[in-house]
Length: 456
Image 1 (cartoon, rainbow, N blue to C red):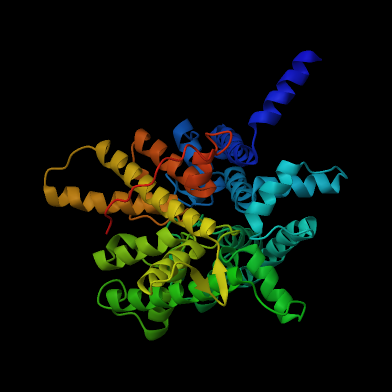
Image 2: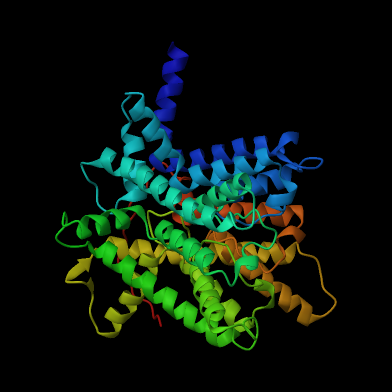
């Protein structure tokens, strides 16, 4: 009994909400690795442990990078395992735990409440359980509608059972911004298909804007809310602008390359699709490996920004990007405050935004360097520079949990796979969250006499 109390006190003291959040994802990845490693999960001789770990991490972190062909190398059981992994990984392990405990009539711990509050809400609310239930309800309703639309399209190419399975798999994958596909070339075979493009793009956007934004917009449309929060306004405006700018850039940069000879409808659909999917979804309707350098740069920027807070996507988030731009504009104007929509953003939020961006840049530089160092040598500097672009693209894709690749994922060696696996994990839980998990508490520290330095 004494030993039990000692262990309980130790865990209560050291298992902060941040660490519980980190450990839940890590444990689920290991569980998924174990099941994918078993022989029944593969269609051939089974997956190597490192490949099972990579696949599980990619699924739980809703990334979509794969070292195996999901539709060919995994059995039906293995494919269903990945679907369960990115469904639970997208909405969050703690979310499903809260729903499960609620259905069982058990109370949720304060730490569990705090994790869910931070995950889905920008401001703590009393109707916490109601919001969490809505998160799950919205997800299943949207995924179901998406599956029905996709089923109608797939039914034209497959038998009823095969069409239903493919529709369900891709609907869940798209809404959770996972990017997993049962087709070897992702959705390139449906590049000209209007229904497929619009359905998948809609699912990606709805999954990427965040659940609190969905809730506020629906409440506003029903007349239950008088105004949208600043958070929702920033998310909606930034998302729209990024999609339009990305699509326009892709169109003009690829009109004489990847889109050469394509009709007007296909050109517009492809441009819009790649702009949307680059923000953490991972599907593609064109070959990423043949895109121009300027387009690759645009996609890297879009991937780095990513989706919105409280969503299934990754990246530094649309709000962080917008606040950083607003900070620069306010400094140019000589203002100390960051104001938007007649509201002033707290200084603590601005400081956190800067920390997130700097931490993200550090992680991207670090993992890219690891990939280059362990990637071997090339015969010519030109080939080496090309590999640098591929590794940088792969690293940003992993960090932002996107899943787009220039075609080098299955060519990575084991050390590189471990590095990308770590990057996917860090990108999903957040670099700052990962850093804070190493400390029991943040301390203010010693304050000395101030002295200025030259900057800029």
